[in-house]
Length: 469
Image 1: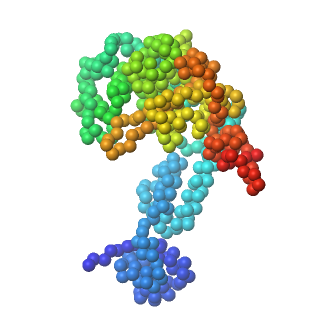
Image 2: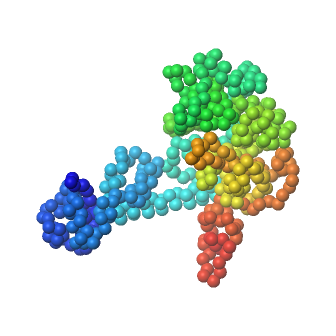
Image 3: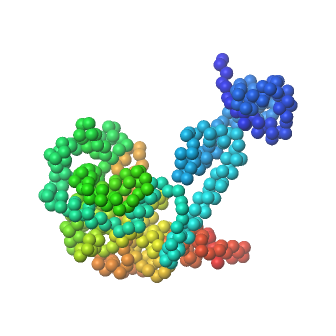
């Protein structure tokens, strides 16, 4: 029977050192020469099945310990070296495997240092947000992914791009789609550019929403998308062609630092242009005012989804035709932030959006239902917030539906101009984020505030997990 060869030199060395044995003593007990044991420990000779059994019987060593590979340690090291700060440092996993195998304690120390670094970076960011809210700017250098650079740029500025609005409104008027915008867009692509739109079944395109085949001049759309999302994908393609100059002009103002960031920024602007094409500014603004910003009514009138109509509400900032300055946030059910935008920039310093008491988190429990709240911040400012869960692309039989939740909000002073503010309700006390909130006795608190010392007292325990002075 063929022998299985296992290279486990560092593990053998750790066992020997743990038993405080010399190479000569261990080699004698195993019935091999000291030089052969030295080669084994340097991974220049394998551990055969016979040697494994001998180690197990002589030193009561667990065979799994010798045959196993670096598990948790390797996974944690991968997490460390996936950070943008260390991106490109290693060509593959081989060096990580060697570190995890040969020096597990060193590996654990690297992981601890990295997590401490991330914790301090998070605290510094929270403090910078706090200082920014008080009018003090603090520049913090941090390794950022291109997507982070793009998100920060879009969140900090008003979600309104005048050139794109004008270009899409003019194109929509020229197109004259009538009641069949999707059909008109398909016809335009075929007539003007020879591009045919086809919907593909799941088995033909299981992992993509949309794909443009330059060779056959066909635009493939996944059948997993709802009819509204399919139309938006077509509109994005049309907007990228018809509004190319406007999108390029707006993109230049961002001055992104990398080609990847510019590519992501161009995609976001094309998405914006698609919304402007589906819901032309003048018509949508007039309809929003008449409907008192009822998102369901607007989505039905323009044949778009709730999410698309809510997005469009954050874009109404044309001079002499300004709408309510809504802001928007989307998260998944794990709390990860997917998008933030605002008619005047997302109000991060005043609203935050990370409080667990916001109704956006409760929306997952009642899919399809709109939740409305008035919320009050620690400084006394109030906001009207509307939340609703959204279903993602159609899932297969054994797949779990991807569900996100959307929150749109505005300052409470505008509540009376909306259908959602008709009934005045008691304000829910919330905060910008646990680390920046100093509300005492909050049952929802997940972290202590960075601005106050912890008040640990063996004789008194407060309602919050994190008591502070």
